[in-house]
Length: 353
Image (cartoon, rainbow, N blue to C red):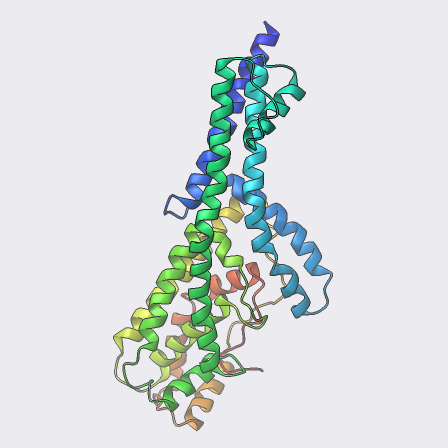
């Protein structure tokens, strides 16, 4: 009786493990929703801890960036390996429960079936049915990942295209001030140019891709000084300064872009915050602490914009109060994501202090 009970429990546990693994793969790559998958979280967090330890040994940001650039690709490759291991363990329990042999024989049969080697044959028709199902699930999991790799890299390419173009426009300092000056110099500040519409579409896309495929958030830019989080911060800061301080007619496209950016950044941040609350969180580092712009930074920005002949509102104090209110809508989310992804330093709107 105890042996029968153990076999029943092994069969039930193996079945649960198999369906949980397959369901995790479907929720990861097929279901178009931003669901947190526990198996994936364990895999990525374990690998992240290892890479964080390796990155901590580097003395420069460039060295840490080089180490962390491998985190997302390695995590993505290890994910199907973890799925296959769990499948193998689950079917091992089923084969042992059905009396195929001891644990070692059951494991050999499971591994042979999973990898479609055919080196170990099943003894009964029922066992054969399970071996075929294991081979099918194994191929399914690998196929899911391979089929979605092009989609992921296309999303990454589209994201980085906007980041690279933004860097060309905001100058070497990479600040919102430089971006506003460039927009004013090219005549795009007072006219309805295509920039804000393009950036609005970019925010909408990263909200969808970086929550349904969260590993994309950790794919780093080709250049160490670039980051999608930094780019988002620059765009939002620029929109907030223009709306609050620049003396021009109301531009609904800038306001739409700002709203889309706040929604996207906060939803991505909430996704990772929920995952951090569900699991032990050591993903956040103080590698690049983020400081909020102060009143002095804002007034320095206004001075720089005035020198560049950008028309500004007369009441600077009222503009500062409005900017503060707008900045509060995205600041916490940007800071969290910057630390989570180890983004480059986020500079104050006025540039270096």
